[in-house]
Amino acid sequence: MRAKDIMTESIVCVNVKETVFDAAELLLGAGVSAAPVVNDKGNVVGIVSEADLIHRAEIETAPRKSWLLRLLDSEATAAHDYVTSHARKVADVMTREVVTASDEATLGELVGLIEKHHVKRIPIVRDEKVVGIVSRANLLGALLSREPDGAVGLPDDKKLRHAVVEAFDKQAWKSRWPVNVVVSDGVVHLWGFVGGEEVRKAYRVAAENVPGVKKVKSHLRSIPATVGMGV
Image (tube, rainbow, N blue to C red; front, side, top):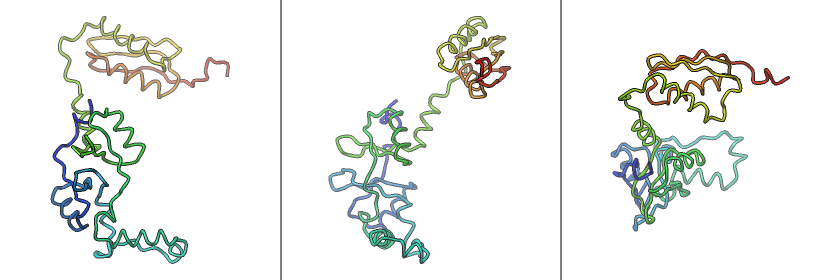
């Protein structure tokens, strides 16, 4: 799946020439927490969010710093705080360094951008024009779209056991001790020893992801990874 498959296409944009009051009205009316800021050509030049608009002199919510912090503030910092709380143009309060992605970006690339830049949403652009936006909610929707349905034509227990064992054999975390797999009526039972609770959990998750498995009962016992290594 790619950005174009999950993005929200019905988006609202704020023109860079508009005021903070226009932006606040647009965000409130559209029921969104942020919107891309575009120029007259439709190119993304910033993004404005509720966070950019809530610390305002008009409603007496501008940050109030102690005398010590004011003393330590540089002139540039003090000036920036003043502009943020008093400026009337969107261009003065918006975030200019916008993280964008192509509509062909993979979901992995989008998640990477969100985590790297600590943002909640990514404007999607095509030919320098904004065509959509991907938020964390869109990614959750993509996850739900991949939720497996009830298996049809369930494999017999012998085939299911083989599939589970095969799934384990592919993993780098496979235990150096034997793990026995027993399958009865689609229920997988796991017996043996593993080197820690995380490995125990990984065995359960891997078995649960095998098509046809109804349930996993783990009887695996976690023991320290150093046991049996002469430590």
